Image 1: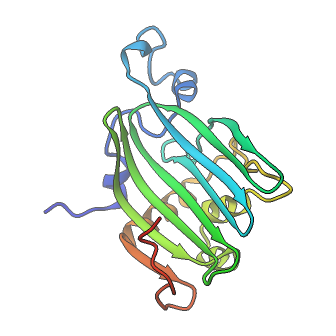
Image 2: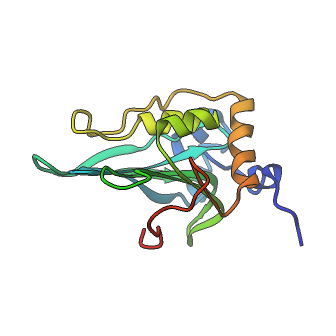
Length: 203
């Protein structure tokens, strides 16, 4: 059986972790033949409602930054806001960041970090870790992308995610993120070391 490592996860495909525009700009794929590559449409999501919030964004391992997508608000009201992030990606490997917030529950926040293969056939999860806790917990972990992702969460005042999609993380920060997911693959980690008070199976 092959041992899963951060290196094997990072270098599992050809042109990975880039959007259509990023690949063309980088010159990895010749624009004259880029039409031969089948782009994959995937969706992120953001939502804010009374006592709850949700955010889902994709992160590029190759570019070391959150992938640029098109933000589309599809429903707005006084107390509820929902939108999607439309991505057109080359097949490859990404990290899918998800954050679920329940204002009245303990722990109130759940981070889901998943290494995924994105293909025309769909999305396959290769590794995943779940973190129960909020900003203070993320800061103690010392993973820059997780801290920034939490700060990007939608609020009643800023309903669209606020995150710098041009910020490039260092190679050290990139490796630290991936090593953490591999080390704790399929684990659930909480601030106090105890199991969550309710099941996340319904997510």
